[in-house]
Length: 291
DNA sequence: ACCGCACCCTGAGCGC
DNA sequence: TGCGCTCAGGGTGCGG
Image 1 (cartoon, protein in one colour):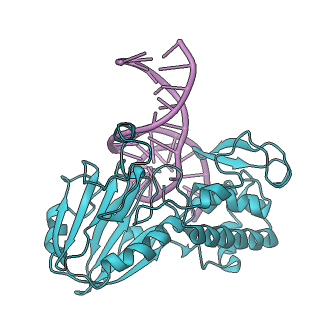
Image 2: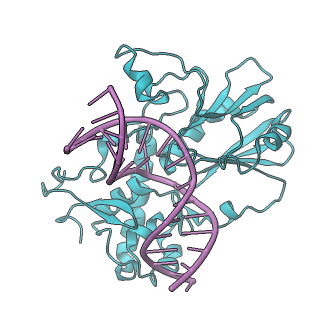
Image 3: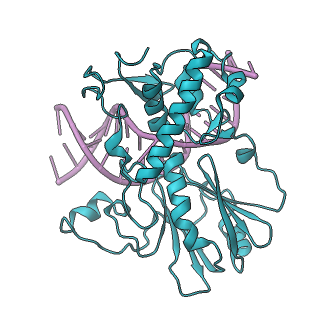
C-alpha cells in the first residue's frame, strides 16, 4: 500500500495529532511479528512520554520522544494510521461496507485489525494504527541505539541525487526496476512509483541496471522526484486501502500513466500498456514510449 | 556482493 | 452459495 508519498502525507497530517501530546494509555492486540517491540514493553516505554517530533526516512515514520527514545512505524502493505473520528469506507471490510447505504459516513470503531491505540492526557482524539495483513511494524529504539532496519536504508528518494546513486547501481545486472525497489539504494520507492518513474524517463523496467547510462539515470532520478512530489501534492494514491489520517482519499491514482493500466492505451502515444512480472512483482510499461 | 526465491498474513475477486 | 485459486502498493532471510 503505502510508498513514500503516502507515508509523507500521513506524516504531515498525523503530526498535529502526535507532536506535543503526552501519551496516557496504549492498547494493542496480542503479540505478533507486527510488534518488533513486544506489546508490554511498548506500553511501559510509551506511557507518560511526549512526542517531540515526527520524521520520515523512506517508508518509515520516526517519532522522537521526550526521553530520547524513538518510536518507529512502518505501514507495510495495508497499514492505516489515522485519528479517531476519521470516516472512510476503506477502514471497513467489504462485508461491513455491503451492509451500509452507499454514502454512509460511519465513524470508525476499532476492530481486530486495529493493533495499536494511543490515548493522550489531553482530551483530543486517539491515534489508531490498523493493518489487516500485519506486514507493518512498530518498534522502539533507545537513545543512540542502532537499528538494522533503518541502518541499511539508502538515501531518501525525495532528496537522492543521480551522481551519488551511480556507483550503487551501474555495476548491477539485475533489472533497473529491481534496483529502484531496493531500499538500500533508494529509500521510499515502491511498485507504483517505480513503474511511473520508469515511464516518465522512457526506460523499460526489465532493462539491466548496468545498461542505464549516466544521462538516463539523471533523467530517471528527476522522474522519481517529479512523480513523488506530484503524488504528495495530490494526497498520495488510494488504490485499495490507503487513507490519509483524516480518512480522506488521495488523488494520484487518477494520474497513473502505467501502473495497473494493462490493456489500456498509453496516455502519451496510444499504444497498449503491458504488464510483465519482474522479481515476483508486476511491472507495467508502454512498449512504444519506453526502451 | 549479488541474485532469485520462499515466506510472513488476510481479504477481494474470479471462474466453476 | 461455496470452493479453490490468484493476486495485492511491504520487507526479511536464506542458499547458491
